[in-house]
Image (cartoon, rainbow, N blue to C red; front, side, top):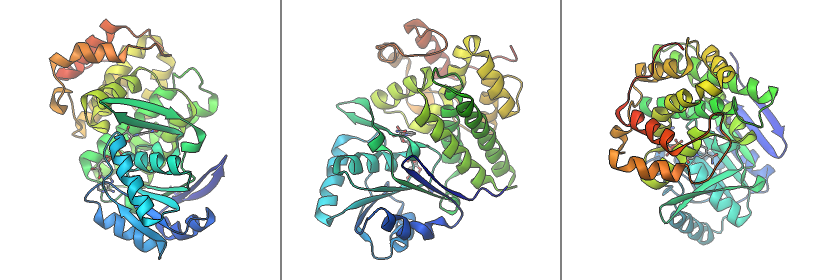
Length: 354
Ligand code: NAD
């Protein structure tokens, strides 16, 4: 299926296709950027070189030190680099880690921000910035945080390693799943969410078998999931992963991959319609069990213990994750979260069709 498109949507410009990196200089010009600071995570030299070349003289400098969960001290180092380079704009190339740093820098400086996503995190289309300081992750939401332009170039994602691909696609799926039971959901967000889940599942299956336009499906599914994330509030799954990522340093996408089926299983009795929609989009009989089997069949991480979380962390994590109330289909209790975490810790299999 041809997925190429271009759209302007309430202050967000999206260019989607293969080879769209060639549009970067024009897109930066459109925003008035002349001297861009290029951001990335370490060891992404090849991607950075392609972007610097694509900027055709408009690259003022590079900062390749982005760190997951946007620690404020890293943002300060990037701001110093921006000042030194005389940057008037920011170009982020990478996953959610790089986009997060790009948001933090562009928001503080009030300069244009162009993102070239290379994972399926979805952050590039949201007005949300998560930052960590003193071991705690806080979130700021402001329309000014949302990047100005997103250039999805499928060819930038072809080198994404398989384990990162699987975890990142399931992280993306989590946005769509929670959108299906969010209080602010609409018919439009429901349709985006189910289309996103179906595209992500199709992309993963195609990639596993080497068929179809797998990477385009995955990136398209990620774009839709990001729109869901930006449009409605998230529930138990995201709050829990936010705590486990921010306070226990667990890796973001693998963490989402392990926790999502358990969070779905917890919510399923109070979100039957959403679970039917997820099951339909995934092509499985039971959403939580089917998703768990699917991710495991692809070699995705299966338990929190393998990510560095221990039994001794359960009580503190359950306490932190239930400090403040938030909307969720099923009431969130400290005991309920502790039980969920214990099951996820050892990777207990989720039962069959309910
Ligand atoms: P990431 O950006 O850290 O990327 C994972 C790894 O893949 C990194 O080592 C990176 O260098 C590598 N990588 C990225 N692209 C590659 C490519 N094309 N080829 C080879 N390697 C590549 O991880 P992520 O899961 O994309 O993002 C996680 C971060 O994003 C977290 O901090 C999370 O909180 C944030 N996030 C924020 C939002 C939001 O709306 N604010 C949404 C989703 C995620």
